[in-house]
Image (cartoon, rainbow, N blue to C red):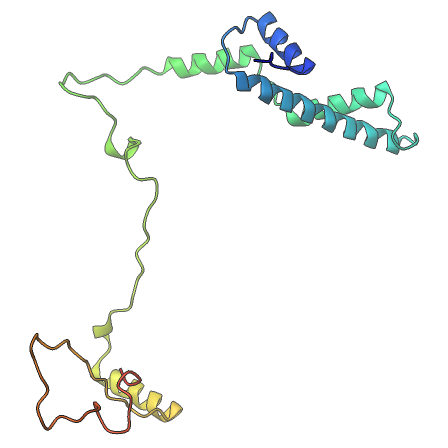
Length: 189
């Protein structure tokens, strides 16, 4: 079995982690840190090239001042610095001044009210609202029917419902071969 070939950058990251006291970590952490390092370096160089182009240097020529300006710009926009420690201590002190609510003595599990539990679904179904069919009066229905037939010259078609016959049922001897002469039953259903 051949020894595993590790890039020099990966070895540097491993040494950096060890120097910080990190001994137990997932091997994929090194890959993630390498990817971050490559991406960050490429973005800083692109920003430095843009700065040098604006300052009048030839294309592709970058000096140390351009790189420093790109790093400062990237640091201000990409990374959020933590708030000052004194501010965090003041916020914690204000929060901790409020007394905790008294617990009731009872047996069993103490869970928050149902509305505050994470067991509830995190979505709501919005019911569709329909106008009730029975709200229209008979006069309204007749007026709508008259408008519909006169405006569109629509002939009324009779709808025939076809039920599945019971097992063993046979049509009578006088029954026609088609449901009605000159028509297709599937068109009128």
